[in-house]
Amino acid sequence: MPVHVLGNMCDMERLMALAQKHNITVIEDSTEALGSYYKGKHVGSFGIMGTFSFNGNKIITTGGGGMIVTDDEGLAKKAKHLTTQAKSDPFEYVHDEIGYNYRLVNTAAAMGVAQMEQLPDFIKRKHEIINFYKSELTGVGDITFQEVSNNVNPNWWLPTIMTEKQKGLLKKLNDNKMQSRPFWVPMNQLVMFNNNLYINKNDRSDYVYQRCLSIPCSTNISDVQLEMVAKTIKQFF
Ligand SMILES: Cc1ncc(COP(=O)(O)O)c(C=O)c1O
Image 1: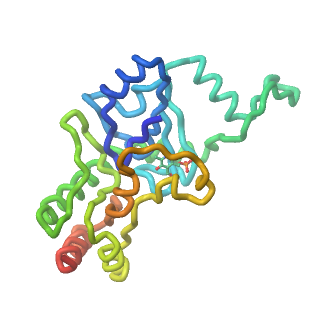
Image 2: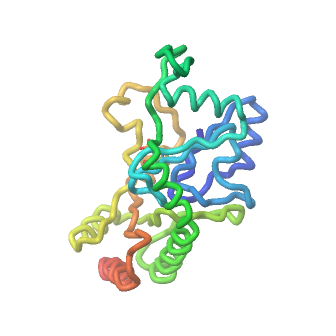
Image 3: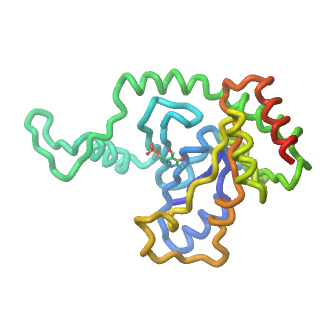
């Protein structure tokens, strides 16, 4: 299950070759990369399934819920069955396996359709935002941006920078009412997984966790607000 984070995409050619070699099924968590492409192919269309969340903070939202994409009709039917309570009879309340009520209700789906129509404009704005930040913040302190390979055309959902001064900068921005968030706490550090085996060579997830922060990037942020964020970051360094 590759997770395409922040709008960027994993190296799908390499990953799919490995999966094929070892006969491993791939399901892509494409949530953060809706509208991103790898060599012209849309995220979520490499593996047997792609999943997308429409949570409130995503590039488009239905308030909650999400979707699965697949070109396997059997799997699509199975997913539909499991997410609609696994009823096997249209009249009687017979369930032939354990199902779930994971429907994206009609009203939310309608909102999703309308949101989807706006996706190109949202992506355009996200590109303007990252281009602005890159032009303003490249060379400031020890800031680096996420690397994107030439094969990927990202949606730039969540501009995120890396710095040794992560904690101080987070405080500075949030103290100035500029919402800025740390990276996810690695799952192996969460209390419920404390006793699970964690295999790593370099603990990259902790490295990233200690240094990354996401900076303000809502599609409705104004140019003036962007300038204030950049100015505040420069002042900090
Ligand atoms: C990569 C990724 N996968 C899954 C989720 C969770 O999706 P949901 O809350 O719709 O289950 C999120 C965030 O919401 C996410 O960023």
